[in-house]
View 1 (tube, rainbow, N blue to C red):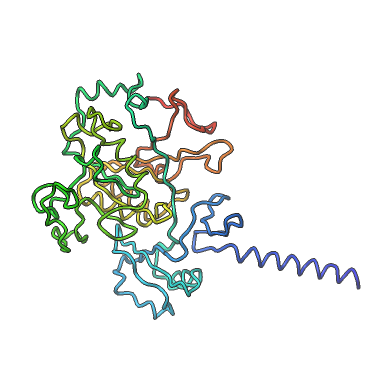
View 2 (cartoon, one colour):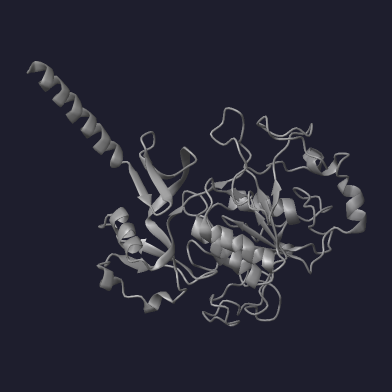
Length: 381
């Protein structure tokens, strides 16, 4: 009898442990999410490891028949606790916000059980990848090394103002003296002077509360913030401004750094479109990143700079990269600068892993990959 009791106790304990494990795992169609005991947060779970932290109150959806969300009756399927918080973007994606008083997993399951969606996944947070903080040209070995010789390149061109580069990030200090001449101005929203209203030299009249160019965004004078849904991308301006400066800080003006295409001592360089996708933490949000790419393409960007990464692939992000490629817009992505043999990040991240991007990884001054895993090869310039 005692032996039987022993086995019963063991069985009960195992069952309790199994039930506890099930409370920390959730599968949604082909996606798996797991609770991380270390930081008490939920993550995507991909290839037997934790991926990106998810936003439990945000769900990305796309209808199988690509219908408009206004035509969908949520209450018909017993769903009462969601609100639409995005415009339709790319091939029919929307972002839904789940009420704080609701169980997000139950709502997600109800959405899945409706059978109306071919994409259904929790929104997720990515990472901002590191950028240099040097403020003197002689420290910019990445420009004057023998493998790049930027001085000779500048003899040919120091930046073409007809080229628009969208910086998708946490915001840019647009009035910084080293880049203010190279900020893109949406001519459809500008009053005609070509200078954003928030510059002291502007004549005013740009910000009028009207979508003058009918692109769906009111007063998007220099770009748009797709997380905060306003016309002034902000949140992590240090990172975004660093990325912008590398691209288009004016050269030969005795100030700060020299951008690779920022113009030369008075001449304009490439134009910087400021597009935001970062929350308050600050971290890039996948749905905002995808919508930001679409905006950049539709509003004339020739190149998109994306110094951000996510660990797991996203249907919306993949769609955005394909949209850019189809429209001949070059997307340059950071691969993730912290990988290594003993790192939780031993491989290239997304969106750099997508085939239709140019992927860039950090190197040392000696041309060695930073924290390189064994399967990475030395760059072949």
